[in-house]
Length: 151
Image 1 (cartoon, rainbow, N blue to C red):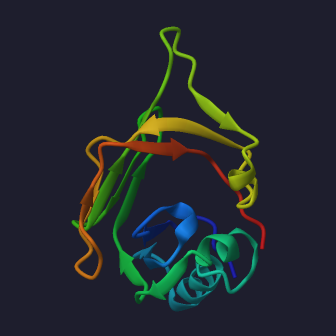
Image 2: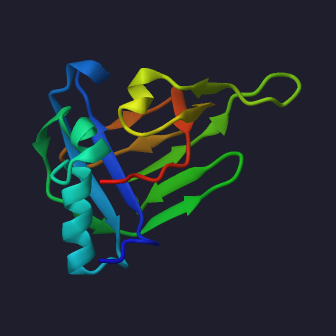
């Protein structure tokens, strides 16, 4: 199964905090994915294949049905991710006066999901409005990192 080129957004609502779990989640998969790719990506992101998805999936009590959607990702120094009219994430990396990006390195919580470094970012202007989840707008923190999960 070839999954390269597919885009997934994993929207999770944690009612208390990250470690308390008890979350509600939905997976959005780009509208170019075929049925086999959707099944495989669902299995990965819900944790049925083990690996990081299992760690993150353990925080979720309620899985809403996966939806296919138009997803647009714009990388760069201030990345954005848009999921149709449902939501948008806007990130601006935090940097000092010399332009050096603030980075979290080798944090145990990130290691649990196979991430070694995370660029710290502001998420001002981000919002999501899934009709089956709590609506939110962010004026807080975020992070940017490439990753390559192995399951």
